[in-house]
Image 1 (cartoon, rainbow, N blue to C red):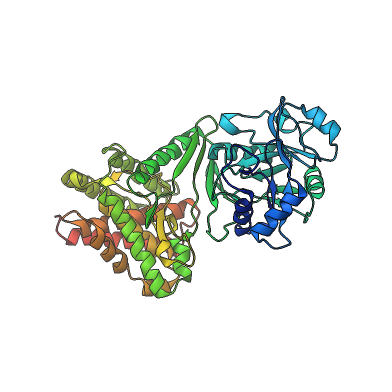
Image 2: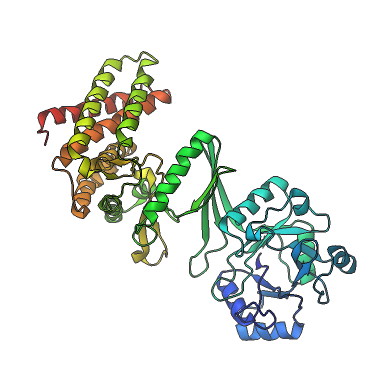
Length: 508
């Protein structure tokens, strides 16, 4: 059972601008099954609640209850569920507990305004629970509440703390059992049979933990809060992740915050705990979408991905130092070769020759075309492209976003295109039907159509960076113990073929 546990009405809270009837209707539209009106130091009369139900026209099974928000000297605001009389401002917690032993006492918005509750406060013996999600918390504060709840394991609830129109029901609380009275609701809280309604998907990566959090129900408007919380494990990894976070923020500020083309919005960062919070997006990777899509839809997704990339390049951003690309490339290419030399791989000589050709050609491209270089993605491929739709019944709300900007540099435009084409072939190599349905010309043509400028030898550069990406894939296969696989030989041969194409074609 899902219940809105914290809201204020214009009838009995001077801070609120929304009537009880409107609150009830909004919460019911969010597919919740109940609401508790928690005005400051006030309890609604049962006859008043019955009138609200009649005017709101909600079904009989929708529960409308009354509690109150009380200001205490020890903890500030506390939500009291189950007291049968209004409680005066400034009443101590111990006195409230003495008078109403069956009531549930929940600390309201304890993280508000940057406060950081101590563990002994969160587990206060007179409290029955803590409100960890609240619309008066920042995203960082809600995130901190979530982390503290997991660590200290106290009983937690969520409450929207509604004071105005259109956001009631965003932070519901889930009860294990149905409740029909405020006494039953208080008993469930006191026994710990409730929790904030959210979905958490932990995803651990190298030296980091990533948690995808979705809070609340989507309701008719399909709006829910989605967060990506990244806890970075090392200071070296933190510098890289924070750099990507900053790049994303700059790109968002150039028109990628909404609409057809997007980047997850950076929300908050905390250097002390090495935690980043960014907007979560509703949808799936382009890789997953193409595996399941009808061909017509798949072509649209692929064209939108190309359009996203062209739009980024058309912005002509230079967020990071212009000379960083070649420095990092020299380091990465050397690392690819070291993977082969370390195990004395039988194809080391061929790999060394290909990498030397790539390095030489990259230096030429940068020397002759530095004016064309722009901030790129650096690792643009189907698993780093996100396809979503804000409203499932409205195709016009389809969007494409890119994630993972840790490899973003000022680079030749063809780098991202060559990377995508090589990775597309590699990722779908065992799905021949995808290659047949979506030949690479679909992506390339869409990119060229939407790009406002490309280098004179753009297609030649695409072959260069296709070869370079294949060598990255080859090095990865060696790293994960697939040095003798058929896939390794395939990507080496494809890289060699691309390098041969460079030798056969004009330099510019």
